[in-house]
Image (cartoon, rainbow, N blue to C red):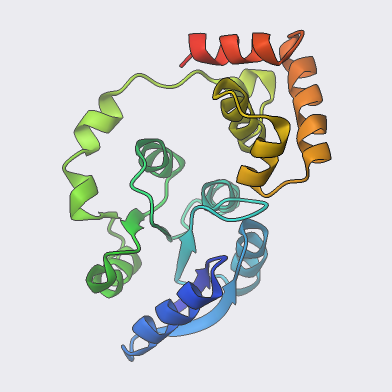
Length: 206
């Protein structure tokens, strides 16, 4: 089974490689450290399974998965993260990934990848029990009609939380000037005057 590993922590990538290659069924054909690399490596190698982290610099795993699946709906993508975040879980399901596991579940990684390879959808035990509740929640406001990207939405959330441009930049691994440019574009797209109006809009549409 040909697998690609994507994680921006090289130690994690090395550990996953050791875990998987201990099983003779696995062959790690490539590794990467960003969402952009995931897209490029996937289209180059067409792996049986893409095992990818969610939180990464520049482009996260959810955005990369969405891009890959838009061109190859049959892509088998298993997301791996340290965060059991409701929003991540719901997005992972809705964009069509094959699973979502916590990195702490080392014992389940090999059987999960094999299950995904065999066409199953896999979620960790601590997540599976919560799926009905999560999927029944009201859909979040659709910022797509304003042409707001995931990165811009992250910035909007930061503004709503009262973070400064510098704090938002640090949390998203961006330059402060880049955040200012994003914010200016967001205000223009949404026809809002300032960050206060933006924060109020976000809080009213959660």
